[in-house]
Image (tube, rainbow, N blue to C red; front, side, top):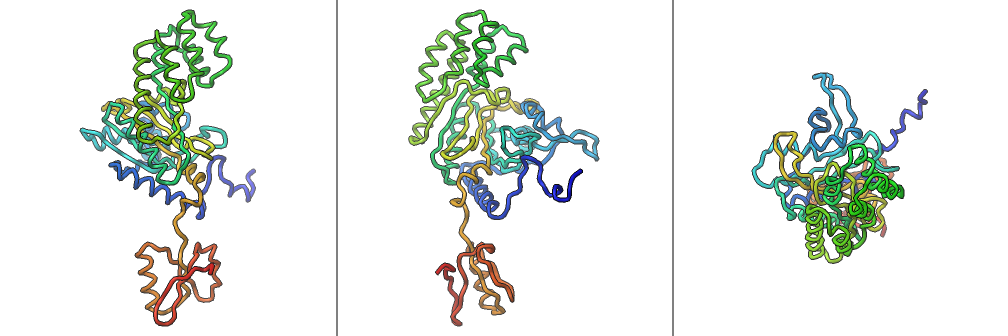
Length: 395
């Protein structure tokens, strides 16, 4: 039986954000969205829930096990709480907007997972992201990656490292393997985990020595940009689609290095997370001091097909709570001004003027002994009888 104290406990992986941290989170959200706006991305606010027919259609099916579902009491149909925002923006692009050219959208929303996506992670992260529809070329992928790097720089994230991959590398090999769906699933799991059992599985299931060698060496293809040269040697006899994927990675690397010379790059050619969701370039962004990736994204062409309008697409999102934890106090806006209790109309006018200029002003109450720390103030409004000035409380 739940005790009286237990009633106030939150479910595992669900957290509240109290004032001291909430102001940091909100300040970061505004700065990120302002950056996206300057790049031409239009803000959308997707609904908290949708019919699962829409929410889990197309690429959204990969999210099925992460999605909370319940019955709509009005329609009797099944509803789901969003576990990702991308399928919703794809529906907007296909139905609500139907723009002919490039469609740039951005959002800042909380998503909800039935279980953590990694140990000790939140089940209710705040996604702040962008989606770019209608542009098939690498220039769209490069724009989204560049925007991600610049946006994180803008909010004070230092020591960034970009992790790049391409799902076309594994996909092109998988397509020529004569394996049933069960064994394809086994191989995928072993590669994704970079399991030590991979060698034995290859020996039992793949007869072609060339293909066996390619697959065996795939998990080791990670490191700096030189890994692309090693990959070209290993996959010299591979399918043409694999060579194209390597060429695309090379072009993205060259452009990103040109724009961000100080950015660290890491390539993982066996990057298979969201493999069934993405169709081309994939990436994640890390930073010094971060315990996990701050953001990730990639290309997911034709996601709108299930909505009747297949369009090329690429995008990314960042975890706002993780960024707030990393940058901490450096992202907080300035503290406020304490105005002692007063009936003086001149002080009321001064307070209004300060607030209109962007200052936070907290007015005191009669009989109050102010705790400046709790009030979030580091300055006080004072008067000499003729005018007003603001002085530091610390002096």
